[in-house]
Image 1 (cartoon, rainbow, N blue to C red):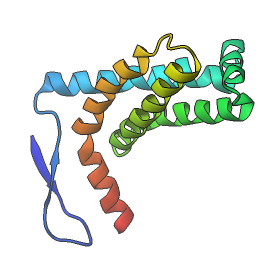
Image 2 (tube, rainbow, N blue to C red):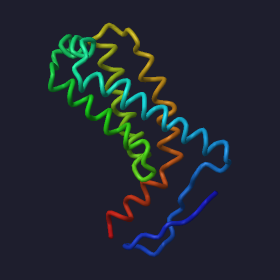
Image 3 (tube, rainbow, N blue to C red):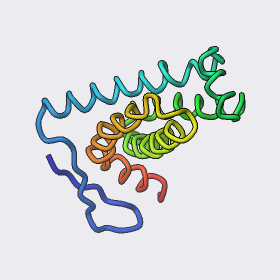
Length: 145
């Protein structure tokens, strides 16, 4: 299903795409919710409440509480943004960057245990970023007004 959006700065229509089939749209929404819960609740909240395992990991890295709270806040806010159509592509793209950093830190500073997890999460995040890129177009159009 292809639609067009017109920005205030330009009158040229900009193509906005969305998943074509109903099943694809349901799969995309489901994936966005699952990843939002994972990043926000399962990953972000333990850092924000200073769960002992999170504290231990960040102390091991030498980042301490400031690093732990910063990453936890980014994960929680990014999880919320994944649920918002205008922000989901931007959030997924930001999470891809966060996962690249997580992979590098896991391999270099934490001995590589669970290093595949950030790489695996990158694939569904890339699909979300691509499939919801029309939201970014709409967001930019709103900002320019």
